[in-house]
Image 1 (tube, one colour):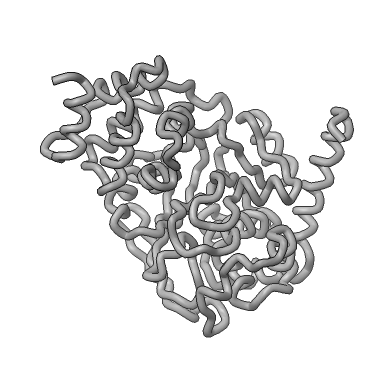
Image 2 (cartoon, rainbow, N blue to C red):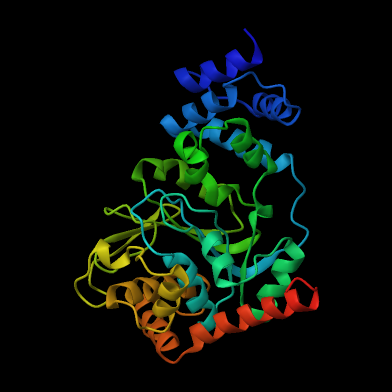
Length: 345
């Protein structure tokens, strides 16, 4: 059989793992444009049908890491918030939480993508908001030092992912490539000390726990709730997985009682307007509570606070005293000033 046949057979039959060398061969052929028609779509579809075995998963990510240079700059003491996407359509809870946590004093790096199931992905929203996406690790470090938060662009992801997206056209990566979103939080080369990852689909949790365990220099919290929202929500029971430990955050414990998914939905108004309403506390109580709960988790994970309850109170103060929205305005002004100086405005 050919290399293509061997790889697809192993993925489809799941009777043997795909090793690192096989993945290197596949990606070499992808980069040199020697894949057969439909091969990329077949591989992505096989991966997305069910999470592959741990050996295959580890070999795939090791291969992608070996194909790119290691980050030249590290972000010790910083926490990354990133979800798998794929859940109910909500406004950009994690992006707002990153801002609130940074305004509280945590050091936050936010990675993300374009829209998946939501109306606007984090990168789409930030573009509209006028907040700069960093294009290198050096720029990320500068933003982190200046604002306490940095929003990393797509440079943190393997170039092979973009090539796969082009290879499967006119098919959409969101259609046949759910696997990419599921493991996306671990595809990004982001040298932080902590990571908060919301998981929409419980079926992928074992694979993500395995990947988290392969990062001994990083404390990872994997969060899930039965609603399939890839962030913590106050009106549902939330499960936090950290290594072999499990912590439950019962519904209505740290936030005001009540609430529903409809309170977190993207409204028909301008997404920037909705985002700013949340950061100023003018949105629904459920929406503000969700952002504060996730910001609190970031602050605890980052070591800024010792418990969720006190961190939630601090997050609420940060919203209502204007510190969170002031941080956004400073980042918007900085980008506008840079564009003006560069002659792009």
